[in-house]
Image (cartoon, rainbow, N blue to C red; front, side):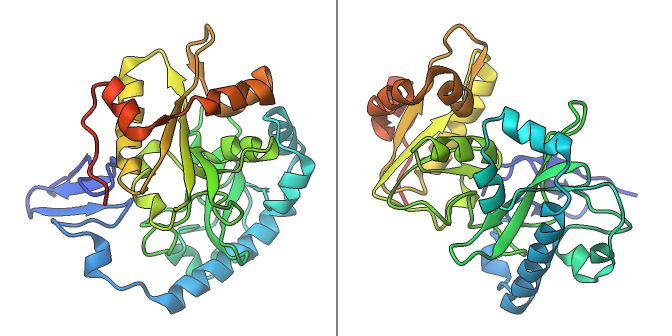
Length: 298
């Protein structure tokens, strides 16, 4: 039987564009792009199904919050996340056991289960919320070091109605930071720097359709590895196309091979991080200093 392969998606920049050469078909499991057109142009969202999915996610989250294990709680504490945020953000844990929730036909449509257990089992669950408190998406962080670190529901985020929502977007105002991942967004917000988190750099374009603000600053991880840095720089380029104006902060490595936002805040403190933010560069200036082609703003 003819086989396919994965390529980089020209629409979202992710690496989940599945190509089957024998029939010329292409489909991106990130953004729904297919054969030269985005899924947004091919399919209309079924609002009734999306509401049903969101109701289902809400029921899952109610179950997962009741299952927060001691191990998961200790991990969240070690990352600097407060009890108040755990409760307010409805952070939970998905156990590796069967639940009647997974027997529902909507479980497959929502990307949660195709069989006995959840695809997110054994993971800390971070719900993505709207300003009205609806759960629009879920993301699971593994506790085991040898597992895939992050995982979300399978299938297209577009068809689930989750494609427009960064993590924490329900609570920020007109001035905020944009970073990668839920933990960093939580820690920054706890320390007085409102932030939203994007679930992986490959989503930094298509996850921001509703993201806007008067003062937006992108804060990304700094690395010694040039190849990783280049991937992050490309993600920043893509994100800048979705924002009218934005600034960029490069965190100092401070002798480490890697430096991320939450580590910097927790080890260097509030005031030092504020000094770094005060030196944020407009995106065009940042791109020129790195000799990068600036993006055309949409």
